[in-house]
Image 1 (tube, rainbow, N blue to C red):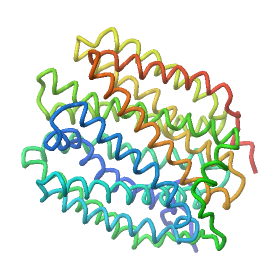
Image 2 (cartoon, helix red, strand yellow):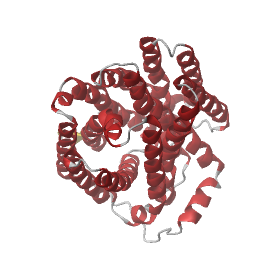
Image 3 (cartoon, rainbow, N blue to C red):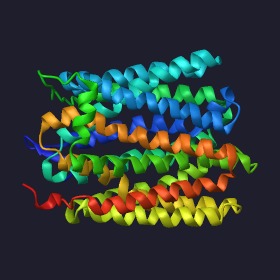
Length: 400
């Protein structure tokens, strides 16, 4: 009957993917709350942009390592239990963030949160794949990402217009409440994924080497890394640019709201088209579009409102890329054994994008004006455009 509803014993019920998408929406709303004020929160502990970028890069390195070291746990565990556990722990951590004002405790909490986030991302992605048919992975990924981006449309707006007036602590407390609510709904949903293996691959180095021995996995990895590389510009450096131009903190949320609108409007339609015509075409079009956006932003950087508008337009390119990159990875793996073993390492692409997106511009800012950040991002987008020619053009609609 559709992606939202199905008929079961003569009655209408929500599908598993619909229930899980709603849970992801609540989790994403919580993340949107905290990410909206994260740069400002970091600045309360670390006093300049370079330190903020470098510490954020350190956390990205940590979560990169976590994805590999968690492989044995992911392989042998019930994915539903892991996901529920990660939600519960994160809700506690957000409460602690709200009441903490000391640098050392912030460091400890952020390290623990980083590791738990890696567990949450890996278990969530495998659950989405396991409750999807082989010919509907792209469509379901787009559906889930659409719910995710509804949260990213309204989350920053709620923070900027309402919660920020009460202080950053209230933002973290609100995030804790939402993620605990998601935990309750997940337990009630009865989504069950017992996809586990008796034989596990505990050798982290070997898992790393095996992943990159496959050409298709390697290409998929770097194409995926490009997405999070770009989001660093939007969620870390653009808020800093807004503050440097003397604008109010509340404008950050308005900008992030605007940047998410194209995603919610176009990710699901683009993902359906990718399933019909192949993801490769969308990789090429999406990354070429991002090159153009980077060039325009560089030349208009002194006109703050124009450059912000250009970056919002860039989200149209991201709508072509974000859901299709992960669906493409699931299309090229062969079985659940590879899924359990390599999905965690594949997710390190998220952190590779974040690491390079944070550290390289942070170093550049020490020596050059802010506008040269757009040259870095444009160059990487152009490289990924060229790499996309090497991707396989898998059409899910023609698969059994």
